[in-house]
Amino acid sequence: MAMTPGGIDLSADLGFLKLRNPVLTASGTFGYGLEFGPYLGLEKLGGIVVKGLYYGPREGNPPPRLVETASGLINAIGLQGVGVEAFAAKVLPKLRDADTAVIVNICGADDDEYAAVVGFLDGQDGIAAYELNISCPNVKKEGACPALSPRSTFDLVKRIKAASRRPVITKLSPNVTSIVEIAQAAEEAGTDAVALVNTFLAMAVDLETRRPKLGNVYGGLSGPAIKPIALRMVHQVASRLRVPVIGMGGIMTGTDALEFLVAGAAAVEVGTATFVDPDAAVRIVDGIGRWCESHGVAAVRDVVGTLEIS
Image 1 (spheres, rainbow, N blue to C red):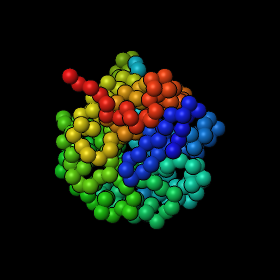
Image 2 (image 1 turned 90 degrees about the vertical axis):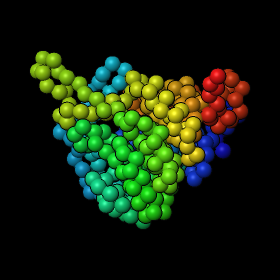
Image 3 (image 1 turned 180 degrees about the vertical axis):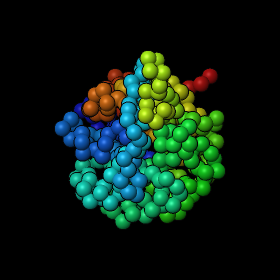
């Protein structure tokens, strides 16, 4: 049980995984975790979600790959990564000493590669769960990904759950007509939790050159600009599913995180804030604790799903 100096219980329970506190780092924004050693103690976090892994190394998209917007950031990194073998050999041994939950974001060009990644990682120690990334909008043109279809979501989640010896968290896309329908398909297929939302398909234009600012043309919008939409989607999904929901999207402060918890999220992931402030996730944990102390809340889990709608 994680307690603040004021005696507040910050622990979070996903059922399949107990966390020191409800704050995780979002995949793709925190590297493999080790890069942030100079800025914060990983043991202060509920957990980290490492950068997405394909089976082999991946270069990602051509530059430019980042564009700052009003209240947000568009990225088209394209899931650049070292691959599972290098991760297991060079990164995971060091993460085992981090004293926090390590969740690995898994990727694939097709269903077979997703299964191969899980098959390899199942043979490694020190991993708490997998985050099944079926929702990245900046890998293929027009943002195509499995999470846009209930059928594709169901089929892939079912296959990965059958192959995995670890819990699976399915990361969902907001670029759909009904986020609830996709989430229900993942739940029916056996996912242990869902995480939402990934970034929104977006673009930026250079008026002087009349060309896209991103080499990939389209990218994923994150940051404070998406928070109200992400919050709505988390509430909709949490209201309809039995499995835990992990919320994300524009969380910059402890207050932001608490709003997601009140809306029904059991935990949250912090992403873009880390680019502005490397120790943002720890600052958000502290902010949650201070709010609970000032409002007489003995345990942060007591606020989960307490949104009142008349």
